[in-house]
Image 1 (spheres, rainbow, N blue to C red):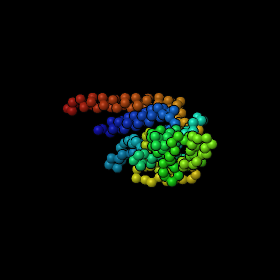
Image 2 (cartoon, helix red, strand yellow):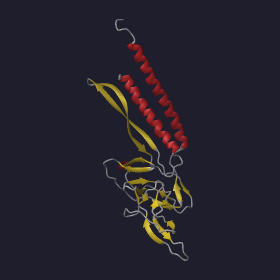
Image 3 (cartoon, rainbow, N blue to C red):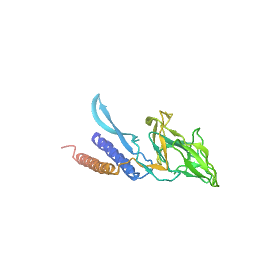
Image 4 (cartoon, rainbow, N blue to C red):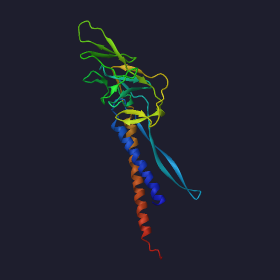
Length: 247
């Protein structure tokens, strides 16, 4: 591929990725605990015979905006929000651990505390938390989960404490489904004191719909310009190849 066409194509791919990331952020503007992603790129210079030849655009791992979203009271006992830095730790049936800010929790048929994806919410010590059948649930600001039997004069009994950790942002990456996972081949580094839990509340998405719409328009225009550039270069090359070589 000719150098000019290759440069235009890398620009087109970058514009396409930026458009996809912005569209995904907009789609999650009302998703509980969602953290906006940022398309990331770097310029890679190429040299020919020791001289600068061209600069290509290369996509990098998406960046993360970990700014806290607005906390809204819901009054639902199984809704919890994090005020400050940190994540809940959840675990799939296969034992894979992930991190999330989404605190819209439920109870499974077995009484296990789960997130919206059906993953177990882990407690301090790394084990799932179970609530006895028929009991109501109360969560305190330090993450203590208490079960209150549905009987007269029943007293609340602690059944676990929700684990909240504060991993270094550089050691995790977006996984999809509102989850974060450790970077491949790396161990998650934990720092400092984690956030405090706000019972009966949910953290909203940190996506700003107005700003995201502006970014969407900008990304759409950039994509159109890059597409036109690729088409123009392709046409010019065809015209150049059609010129007889004996002229």
